[in-house]
Image (cartoon, rainbow, N blue to C red; front, side, top):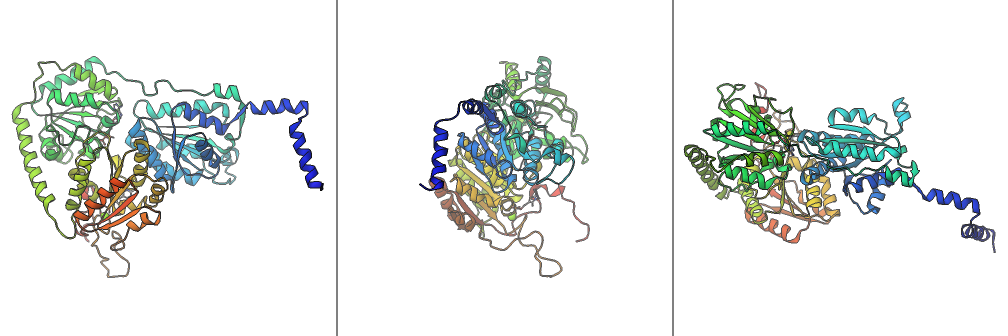
Length: 596
Ligand code: ADP
Ligand code: TZD
Ligand code: MG
């Protein structure tokens, strides 16, 4: 027996027959729980079972242990995309979407998405590892040093840091409550590296965890506020209801539909509220938007803010003579935030509460004697709608070569109609605006897009989250510029084998692809890309399906096959490079130089 073998044998027998005093220590060690496990237990206890993130110091082991504990860990190529995924998971599920990042740069990459979640009123928690507090606070130059809590605070609805393992339960509970209660938003949770290996006595550790009870308590509106709103609606000659993404988030679909149908009031869905009632509903005034906004006399907003997307409730869009003038409308606003009313114009009847409770209270106040809106209002809207729909049908029926946005989207429109369960992700400028107006939605929370900021880059993150949390087919209609912001996540889509069909409206550039460098110099215009880029090869590179299409028929076949096979697919649809307009439909917001 050589020496090494002898030593091994001694070691083995030492394990087999421990000395009495070490037994006590071992038993004690077994009853301890560390920060890693407490974080995982706290999330699990609260039903947070899916994590979108990117590993590295100090959270590598956390990602492993999360997966080992049975949670779904979706690992991205860039934290911003993981963050967008978490934000939209929050919107779709009413549970805070969780994004997990490493210190400083990873945290900053995720922070854009956290700010986006707050801006859009989506519940999200960004959990980030951070470096050693003592070193960071003295600015002594730690690895990835940054005072993350201070930086997150102004961009988050709330921000917390946990320094001791016994406080993990409280930290996670506070983050969940802050994200979900009242107006939802993004919450930052800072977990310094030293927290993870800290141990506490196991029983006490588990006892310290909190299962949050009633995280988004119902907020019942005051009776007099409901009566004031109903009285105002009753007095209207040309009433209108606007549904926003808050109404979609609230999951009060049946009550909202009952309110619209019982009152007979025409309604306009904001883009992410499309499908709350089917877009083909006869009371939808979408196809007469530019008629109903200036003409309405009483407007009820449900989960929609009077921000830029509604021209701040004033100006010419609303029938005023001047760009900042009041159009003369009276407003009812149903919202959970008591501070939202009067943010842009006077709100005559604020109804503060959660949309489910508010709409139920409004419904209860609508009796059998309720008068439907005057028929001249309804018929005027119907007439405009008819005219606009016919005009649109004419455009959609054309078959130009190369394809126009309209001839390509006519195909997407049919495919979505045939697959109403599919989630439609949409970003771009023209690619966004044309899709919003051409593609009808039939079910609630099936359209997710650039949101309040009109942000590019949500595409693949949203697609991944939608596929993961809903299990449904995803169709992502992407401008070629928009796609570029998150295109590397095609690898993530293939890695997790998700049923995502990306359709790129490829017009060779930002807004259009035909601009040239006015100097005649070698550099291309800042607005254009490589001509005829073969984006579909990206999906092929990772084992998915890539298709290059030039006609509506080819596009239709490729989309049908993608949905049938459920395989990751990227369809590169060649669109006329001169077909778009600058900034899409928001050209007026774009300052332009007087001399070109
Ligand atoms: P859109 O962009 O579709 O017009 P916004 O994001 O501007 O919608 O508005 C959403 C509004 O919905 C916000 O003012 C938010 O406070 C509100 N909201 C979100 N969730 C709820 C809810 N459960 N109950 C009531 N209001 C809600
Ligand atoms: N960066 C970010 C994060 N968000 C933005 N909205 C922009 C830049 C500016 N921007 C738009 O508002 S739309 C757009 C940019 C760069 C891209 C439009 O080009 P596209 O769509 O190819 O995606 P179309 O179909 O060519 O118009
Ligand atoms: Mg483009």
